[in-house]
Length: 133
Image 1 (cartoon, one colour):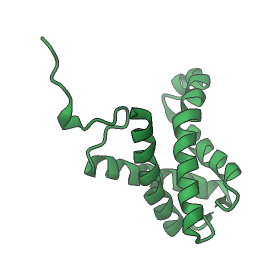
Image 2: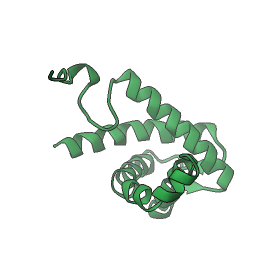
Image 3: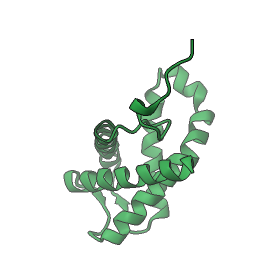
């Protein structure tokens, strides 16, 4: 159940984030079709939920050497995988992917704060049990 709830949060947040990125950045598009936007957000949420941990594990030595900068490029890779899977979602150039990564990260960050959703756990931060002494 926690996996489904996390996927639902990610789906809605990514839908809004991808819409914002497509509105703000030339080179990111979904064909102005709401159905494509919904599918793109779902695929992107699934890619981040299932493929991103494997990519992080494989790139762990590079992440250490670059002091975490490689994580930014893993995020860009997740956008390109989504572009490859969803036919009408397009990223026209690398610069658009970089800016989309920044916009999508920012929108997701704000939404997680506003809706009080912890990225690692779908429980609200206020609902967490106090630590036992």
